[in-house]
Length: 235
Image 1: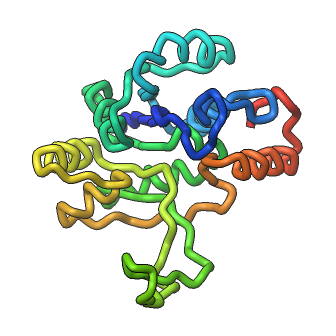
Image 2: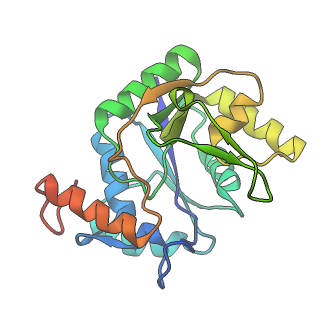
């Protein structure tokens, strides 16, 4: 079973701020993106990897990020205007041999090997799987004018993470249909769900955070220190 990982890392990191994209920011001496790729390769679950970077960044990423830190990506391609376009670009670059496609955020460096394997097994069995965590806060649905409230049933709410894993043919069809219909989704599961295909939920971890803000980076440093990771060392 050939598993290809697509790592979208084409965002500009506007919410993070600073002069460089969040995926290139140093996390105890190593770029966030490098730590993410190390975690994926270290799981032993993937056969090939496609890295999707901002337009015009491919050569810089290879030289300054991948080669400098000794990590590999089968292909490095330019992303699109949003996450959906970037994953689609990764799909177009994925090898024909890919039977399972795993999509994982470039700024989510703490994925555990056992979680990667669990998501892959679920996708092999059911066609589609998402790593997620149960919501612990009470969630309110608010009207556009900010007044009307509805309390959603917390026991049925889960916060989606990545990886999100799919049979390759299913994900390709979902992206093709979304493109043809002009549909934009916030994650790949949304594209599969609109086809009527169920997505199996694999329990994740609160540590599997996506680094989006400086506060997230500070928390990530705390996680690494709690794991006993030295500055400049891998996860």
